[in-house]
Length: 337
Image (cartoon, rainbow, N blue to C red; front, side, top):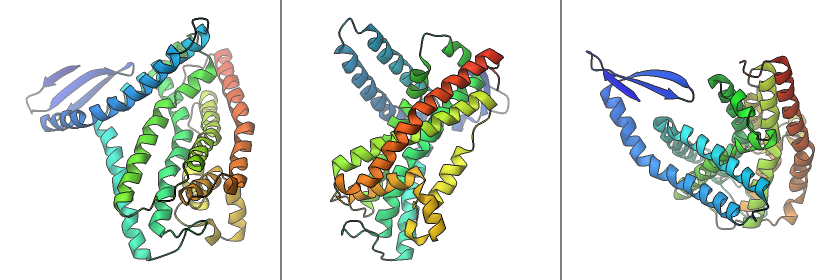
């Protein structure tokens, strides 16, 4: 990194980031703020990276020498994870700002809930206020968004910085490359959800009856059911060189129809039918039920719906992505954007 101060006191920072030259002009105080923020968040982020690396190393160490292919898979996964973590941590202001925005979102809906007043929106006989309802929904809605966005953003970023062709030239299978590219985003999102819920608990969120088995199953099903949509979006980027409008469809309309900020039964009957076909509707039903202490058997319809979604779209999305990459190689447009 090269830093030069001009006659106006501005700090010009020229650095090579993600394969491309980048020139920024910052005031000295802005650079000092960046360094201060980095000093606070880097130990936290390094802790998250260390946990993931320890897990991957432990699994890799237990493999027999004959399992060379599996060992190589874990090594490549770890390399992709560390790369994405370093990229994310290279922007400390943005990284820390996301955490602050989470706290602001919790506080905002806390006061919205006070404005609405007492409402019983509980499940399975356990009363829940509007704040309990919306806090759980907003926290786990983040898993839908990261599942949809992480894969297509990874591919788009590789296209823009010109490293996609180099990455695809390595002996790395396409399913491994696309799936591993979202690992850091999921780990970071899980940590952010824990932080989100911790702030919400401090403001009165009740988590006294959580069924951990049901919560873990629906967390896994949410990731498995929503990730194929993100992979299909990545396939569209490989084909059309533009991001698909999945964020608008599942983030905007999904939040409206899936019962994120108000119950689905408040919608007109026709919109309730549409809501049934949205994956996050069933995910949030299951998560809210788990928080209320409902067993997995009581949430079976939503669990089976998400499982069927995974079985149908999972192989289809990987096939579509593989075909899109093959077509781009044949057309010679792999590096275009």
